[in-house]
Amino acid sequence: MEEFDTERELEFWSLAAEHFSRKEPPRFTDIARWVDLIYRAPVHFVYKKTGEDTLQLTRFHTLDGNIERLLEQQNREPNEALVQKFEEKLEHIEDVIRWDDQFLSPGISSHSVGNCEHIPLYKNKNPWGIYCVGPQVKSPNHLKAKLPIVARILSNWMVERDSGQTSENGVYGAGVRQFTRREGLGTLDIERVAGLMLSYLANIKSAALGAIVELKSDEIQFLARYNVDSSLSHWFRSVVSDGDTLDEIKAKYENQSPVSADLHIAETVFKELNTEYRRAILFLGLSGPSGMNRSTESRIFGMLEELLGHRHQKLEITNKLLETYYTMLRTVEKRSEQTCHHTPRMVALAKHFGTLFGLEEEEQQQLQLTARLHDIGYIVTEQLAQQMTMETELEHPLIGGIIIDPLPLHEDVKEGVKTHHEWIDGTGTPAGLQGEEIPWTGKIIGLLEFVNEFIEAHQSDERRTGEEWTETLARKIIERAENQFDMLLVPTATELVRSLGWDACCNLGSDERE
View (cartoon, rainbow, N blue to C red):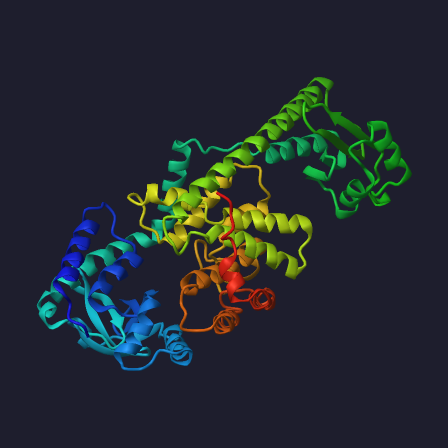
């Protein structure tokens, strides 16, 4: 191994001092980068002692750029086959290994990825676990005398992180919410309030079903529903138009009622809610006598009208707010040449994917908006960096979800932002959701994020042809089916990258106007 030079050693100890100056221990990714200043190794992993004879894998971090460096040090020309073989080893590292007394001191131990250097970790002078780095690396000779100091530092950080891990999610969420409240990101969910009032009206007035429907020139939108099925939704969208008077809507309903006779509707009520903006209709199908006095009913109707007016104003300011958030995010992304086209490329990928997958127009719009907002949490993570210790991949989806939660956006968009780092097998973040627990927007954006990050990592690498990079990306997507990605999405994703070609994939998003 290349000797650990003076400049890097100074960086190593100064970075340790920087981490110790903070109240919270560094994140594991930061710890791995710190240790890697010594080793320049592909993989860092930690085992925690769970019994007298067993160690459980608790942390794992891969530094892809070091794989080819390792192969070159072994005098082996890096190629796709060798890199793939090595990556397969990394993916099959043992979850549980047996304790061995050799782990009580720094040294070399055998693992499924090859021989690795291990550093013992202690808690209150008792063995806590081991920090492993490798494969086929070792400490520079002049640093071996200082490894006990490194071990003590790592022990402090890893034990402190582990002791806070069980409550970290809750603490982190509370910290983020406190921050967002302090910064004025409170919430008034108008749709939920309207839904509550509709439900109250339906119960007091003995209604079997009801809805608050907004009439627009280009579409019919349900703001609240009570016991409404798809047949009534379809009737409103296919029969009613914005230009119809209330009497015309009533007449259409009487001539072509979509409601089943089994509901025994005695009377149908259509009431126009007067707002300064778009028209809205309150619909109730009464099955019995009303138990509400006119004063209460009038007050609820008046409140609904004010809410709908406020909703329209909120929509206008939401659009302006999202544009501002997006500008803030793009400023962060443009700091790095690698990520300077990240979000525009995500939106472009979402557009192509939605077309190939056959999404409806409304679903396409939701997916593209999710792509546009998926990393919006990064506008806050830097401000929270000193307070929180969770990994970045957990931070930004959680924060992003909280930022946009008060806004009148489709629930699939909000959930997609929060869940785009969840994995099908349940090993993702932040909630460990699996399978159908992950919304469709989160599944697709997570897959497109993988595609995007692969493009960013290799777009300037000319050691392979564009066709070779395209096939490598397609293979990696397929390999992760039913583990990271939903198998139903994989064929469309591979078709997308192959149909576009490598050069077009790299150019996606680069034409965004300032």
